[in-house]
Length: 176
Ligand SMILES: Cc1cc2nc3c(=O)[nH]c(=O)nc-3n(C[C@H](O)[C@H](O)[C@H](O)COP(=O)(O)O)c2cc1C
Image 1 (cartoon, protein in one colour):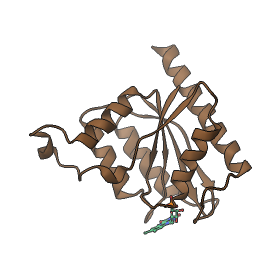
Image 2 (tube, helix red, strand yellow; image 1 turned 90 degrees about the vertical axis):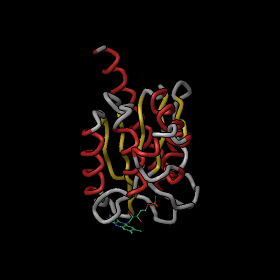
Image 3 (spheres, rainbow, N blue to C red; image 1 turned 135 degrees about the horizontal axis):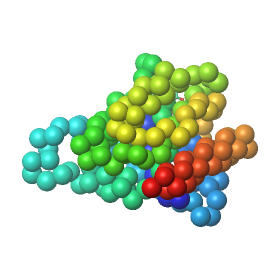
């Protein structure tokens, strides 16, 4: 399956972006984990901007979502919700509808085992409002300043998350 990977963090040493790189590394050969690029590259959502043609970065995100069988979002929690830059990216998709019926897995890298649950709940609500199917949603305990060192426990978690996404894609295909 083709999985589009979206990070909710703009930090250079983001633990959430590291979770996505981990998923790409542990993915089986017939899965492809594609980096969506930084949500920070998108303009602030404003429908007026489409009057003179859709902004290039928005077009690219919509096309990447349209071409994906599933989506993997790794996002931190900020102030009991999810980052504005990620909400902005999702707002651009409301009208075009690429998330409708699409299996989505959410992982939240947090220094605390029980962290990020409010942020995930808020993200789930926004995604469901756009018709996405939440296949997996879980916090992953990680160091804040993660670097790029592999971690066998995290490898296992991301493998299981990809398994969950693959099952959701198979179920959707069987329904169609
Ligand atoms: C402005 C700000 C607000 C935060 N608010 C929360 C919060 O409400 N709940 C929580 O569990 N963590 C919170 N955190 C901690 C982040 O979720 C944590 O540092 C996370 O690992 C950052 O992800 P990143 O490494 O991918 O950038 C906050 C961090 C920042 C910078």
